Image (cartoon, rainbow, N blue to C red; front, side, top):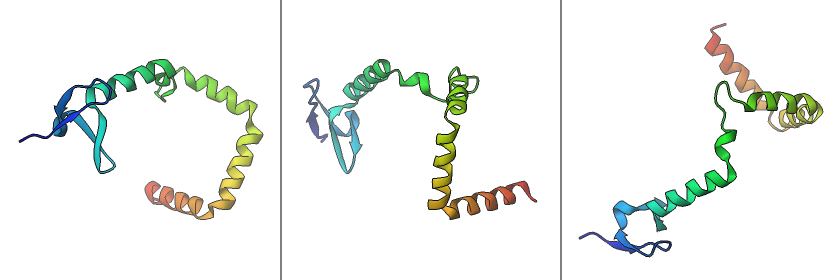
Length: 102
């Protein structure tokens, strides 16, 4: 027999195994339809789709300009990262060398 669960958003009783997402070892409190509605609403309000990286994207010129205005900030960040993670760059260049075959 299928276990039924009540959605906290729409209040409808639905099949727990088919209509609810499984998260952190348990079923979520809202059904899949309500979760999708909420996520779509957030995406539209926050307009996060505008900032996804896509080739030929309008965001690229903005990032180039931002980088050119804030070079010192990026340089400082990279130097701090390099101090904290010296093995990262060693591994990165080792892998790059292996891929290039040189």
